[in-house]
Length: 173
Image (cartoon, rainbow, N blue to C red):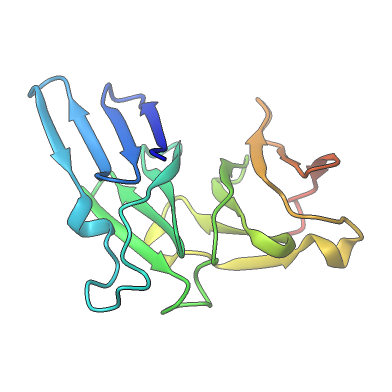
């Protein structure tokens, strides 16, 4: 089945993603579509990880567009007009095997929820670093995995599991 996502960013662009064409930006000023299909195919030599499936679009405060991929995540870096891909198969340290959701906290960090209770963040000011901090919610006595993230107007981080809504204290991380 075809799955898709859409995001209208604060610069006026419209982002589309699906499991066929990958990531596409519509620029209304130029009336042009720009497709990033080749940039989001992380390794064209390994058929196990080739996929155009891009989901869970999120815009941060610097207008970078974050997205889920089958074995990691990616980010369109607005200031450089380029894509950085974090493939877990090739880079476990700075990636996750799955990206359930994204949210930016009050300190300018994009938090990423992943499988098996993992949660971490990447710096908005340098998204090319990928994930620079990881924690596991199971070690804090929280079961399941975070399936969705959000930040409230104060920049506090919230997550939803299958059973709970959790406010995370990100001040010490």
